[in-house]
Image (cartoon, rainbow, N blue to C red; front, side, top):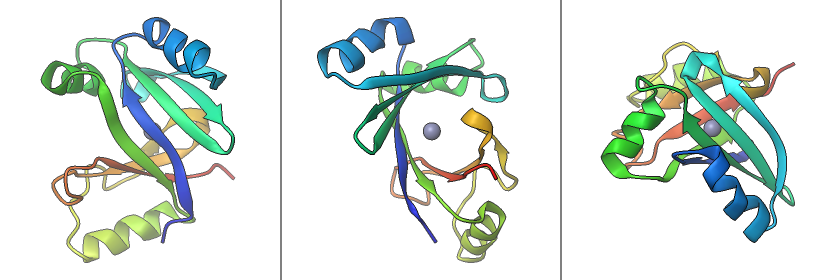
Length: 134
Ligand code: ZN
């Protein structure tokens, strides 16, 4: 079902405060910064070899990221896996009794379609599934 780990998402208070550590201290490459209106976040993608880290900042008080940080503090927020066919994966997981946050795919960064699985079904890990565009 899964192709590969796409990225690890890290919730941060501010991209401007977090970038000096991940980019300048650890030496990761900043690929791009993007606002994802639908999810009320601004994200920065950093790469290291073939691995990608996504830093996520909430853009307003209603942002799930702000709520996450208020509850748990900054830190690892989710793992994202690539799948070949998002609808098919969601249908299959639902059939197997997995609790979904998104029954219908939503718009993610870079035009990709994504959906989240509920951490209650995945041992406390929020999992994002992503189907690459085109
Ligand atoms: Zn993500």
